[in-house]
Length: 217
Image 1 (tube, rainbow, N blue to C red):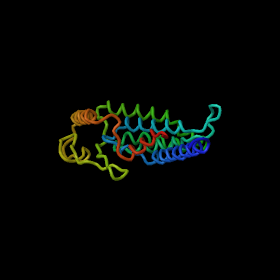
Image 2 (spheres, helix red, strand yellow):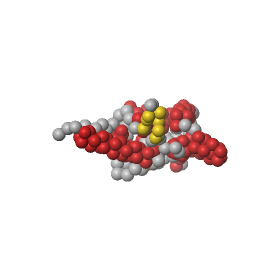
Image 3 (tube, rainbow, N blue to C red):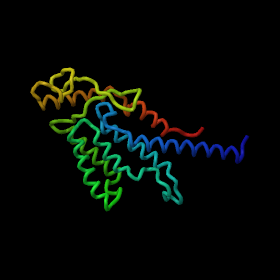
Image 4 (cartoon, rainbow, N blue to C red):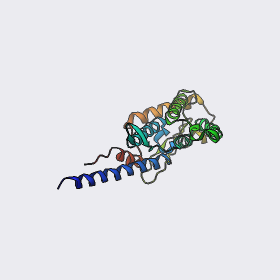
């Protein structure tokens, strides 16, 4: 069987599945958290957000090269600024908390544009994260176990970067040795990166990225 009828059903399936991908990604962007990632890797999160946004844009409706229906949520800037307050590093969170307050005031006259574009926000996120990693204190985000049954992360217990005990560094009863903490953190995350496959994801995000690569038969 061939002809217009087959073409119609093929295009209908492509349209339905494309819309499913768009709706799934849009919903996923609103539920992402830094603490869903092993080691609270902001670099991994930024990379995955860029993939999602690229896929959304690739499915936009265009006429003569002009976008007539955008799939990127109009409040994406607000969503991202809120998302980047979900680490266990209070100084990192504070940067974006302050930006959210300032943007909220500016939004009264500028609308969603006050929260800045995704590219501007993600570039800023990467810069701040790298500065935190390179600082003497280091990145204080905690290591999290990937939870395969729910879309939330669970904290592991220890090792403490200060004394090596089975508790978080923030709960350590010993005097804080910042130099030792920074060294142990660097060692810990270097070892995690060496043993983790590039782009390793928790299950819910893996499901989304499987949709991203779907193609009609």
